[in-house]
Length: 241
Image (cartoon, rainbow, N blue to C red):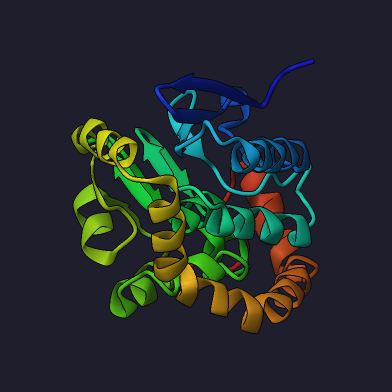
């Protein structure tokens, strides 16, 4: 059986690696379930000071697996687990991140990105919207940048991602960040994280159900069916001007 999320440990830092490069780490029901279980184990382990969320292959995540998608409620639960985990979670991107993959990054406390990383919120191009991932993205992103990339689906790079609040720093900052986390007390990290995630958790409490329902309605629409079919068939959708 293929392990979709692998685990490694070094001096109190547990790295969870999305390990389905053949599917560009698409967020399938199986991958979401394995990642949720791995995070739960990290949360309970007193030897884990912090978690790094990394990826195998050239893509951090291509977003939802259109052939085997998770339940929207399961994906919301995964995002919330990252936000509520009593340990810092550091996202690491050295390749492409798309759609739901950006939602994972938004849930992380710190995100580092390599020079070759790029990002896009591509939902608008298949007839849906970044509904559920707005729970983690909108509280963190600069509003004008969020509007541009939500509406256009344009690809953007690391400088833009840093300026808009999606990415914290370049990948070269990772060793220093991890050493600083090793120097911090577990209680200090837990309580400091509660402070910086309070606004994000308020969004979950207020908006999660509405966004799940909105997402389900959009994905069931005729326009979304055309968009997803066009994507899988590698052709332009009918609305392309």
